Image (tube, rainbow, N blue to C red; front, side, top):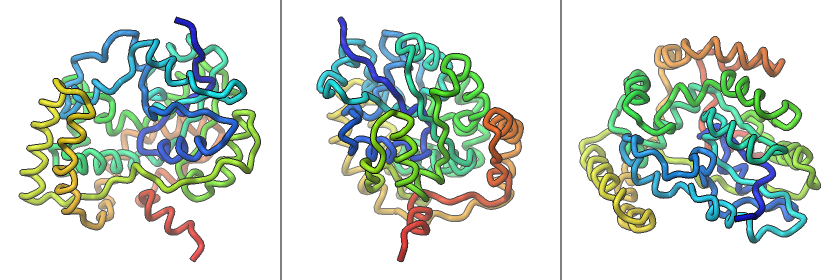
Length: 323
């Protein structure tokens, strides 16, 4: 089947503002963003997603992946002839096989990669999975310590808390497939703190007029939910339902789970600050990778090496909005 492929991708990283960036770029009439935000096509090899994804909710989530080529091409069928086509799958930066498939299938592809303080990113990732009732471990550093075992057991990439934040290695490998001039590296703080300038920069990179795309309210910011007995009971129900949801169409489980998630989120609480000791523990193995990222880009990421993170989307956006 012939058809039009994307000309650019927002390739990562998860929990680094890619959803907000996708939505903002979709407001530009010269761009066409796929109606499915994370098709994950290049994570697959033309076959159904691997059944070995064994983390809570993974099998259900895999049912939403677009792995058939004809279905992927259909995402871009409605694009105006002159529009620059794109899609967003934040795991493309992390998955080396996806990098190779993308570059081979779309030789001139442009890649937008957004990176975030890797400890803040991992923390936000954990909060996200806790809010969805999927992360069974109520202690963040303990969940991080379980990463290697979970990877070995086949848990999907979204559970790879530290691994997803090794941007130096990911970028190094991406450059083997895509020339540097076709890769735009952004920082999460730019997406949140200076959205107009960042959107203009992305527009110029993609060859469309600046000053047209506009920021939209974020939709992917999950609440922090306290670890209470009520939460634990509800989350067990969510995980059990997620396992059963692997055998039902995704829209059915999403509809059924909505009341459960609403009940979970009713227990939201202020997101606590991360203890310095926890940040140091999570950060320490990532320091060599941050140095590699600095070497590759010629930029300083010294702010990632300290004892204080940069905050979550809501708090940063509030600080950057004039009163």
